[in-house]
Amino acid sequence: MRPLSITHVVRQFYPGVGGMEECVLQLARHQTGDGHQVRVVTVDTIFDQPQTRTLPHQETHHGIEIRRVPWRGSKRYPVAPGVLGVLGKADLVHVHGVDFLSDYLALTQPIHRRPLVLSTHGGFFHTQFAGRMKLVYFQCITRTLLTRYAALAASSQSDLERFSQIRKCNLELIENGVTVDKFRGLAKRDARTILYFGRLAPNKGLEALISWFAALVAADPEWRLILAGRPMGVTTARLRAQAEALAVTDRVELIDTPSDAQIAELIGRASVYASASTYEGFGLAAIEGASAHLYPLLNDIPPFRRTVEGLGFGRIVEFSDPSTARQFAQDWPSITLPDGAMIDATVTNRFGWRGHVDAFEALYRRVLDRRRAG
Image 1 (cartoon, rainbow, N blue to C red):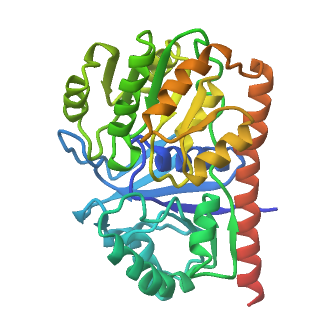
Image 2: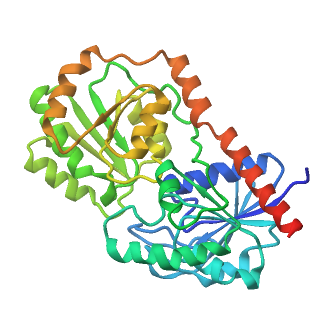
Image 3: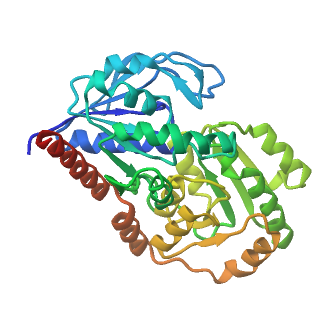
């Protein structure tokens, strides 16, 4: 089969960090390695940086051509019409997330005439902000605009259920892959340290996690908590103030915008990955934690239940209930993980990138075959 020319469109990309950025980066790297010509189109700044700087409008990273365009408005809906001029001679455009970029490329599809594929990445339901308006927009505007997309890839089972309300045909589940070797086996199994790494964002439930941790320390004062991530609506100062109010400051460590190397060092001091997130499109960091042999301690939401089910180890916790912290403290000495080789095999087979990359290529070729036939 001939190589394809693929353009990915995503609001944030390298050097930004986060679940969507990592997903697009790894998908594009694998596709480049498979011989395809890959371009990523994104906006020209990283949201929530203390000192905003304009990034180069053209760059190459790991063999991937990056084109960046100016934007204005809100980071929730970054208006960037310049995307239309940098799609390149793509056989197909793969859009990630539901925002201005997905809406605009749908509206202008009769102009650019490229077949469109969408990965949902949780849609725009990560927070309760403007919840009623979002539902109306989703049921009316999003439903209409998605008719311009040749196919939709739901990034999680919950996305599949939500998007099937407005799209019945050419919708399938293709979950995000995970870079399973980045932190493989780095955890310190005998440590009494809980680590969270990911965005410091309102939907991540970080204040609930600190409150839960305070109950854990009351039951077993040997435990420590590390919170590491880029502030995206929640500041380290706010989290530190809560830790002080709960008298656990000496047990809580806050790391602002860690590099992968820093995260690897933190994993080497921890035995548990915890997330009290109230909404996840997929939950990438929890699986990266599991690949490092951290024990997953996850909030009771559908994506995390699927994660624990797929891994075969871990615990679902109601973080608003302090009695679960006391129960975890009591149970921890008897909790055992599978051996490292079994964890590695499970994570690779269930969440590794190869199968997901192949599923996307099969989807692309079905879309292009239908286009030629129609």
